[in-house]
Image (cartoon, rainbow, N blue to C red):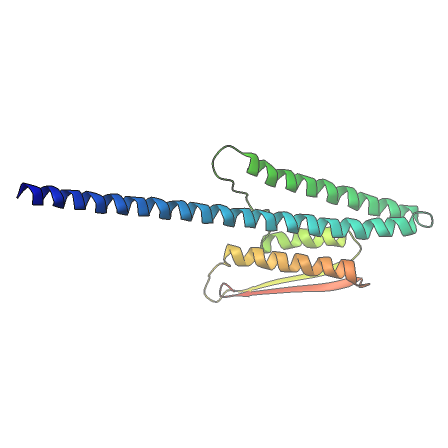
Length: 185
């Protein structure tokens, strides 16, 4: 009876230990997956910041180079846009890298105003390149659901990439951006 009791206790102890080890392994895997996802999000954020800004800087530098002798005022305006864009970009990169260097736990970088509320500011920055941007954001209040944050960030990035492509790859002087929100979509 004593041997059976001891054997039962030993088996129960092994099962509890095994369960705890499995839970610890699972928690470690979840933490690792979260860290990888956060690093990917931060790298996408840096890519978007740098790609958009460098495209604008390249376009304005080309303009400044071509008109420097003929229209110095336009060249100075282009240089002012380059200065503003590069300063803003450096500030955003420092914010992201500063969050990564923080010793206060795992890195978490707040997204800049990159949702529907950031679109007017984005349009204004692109307007400084000489491209007139007509921005139309309409919301249908059918059930009052707000747009999910991830969808808002995606919309911002899509519009940002589209405007960058218009500036970099077309001779257009005007473009229209229309965003319609209905039912959280």
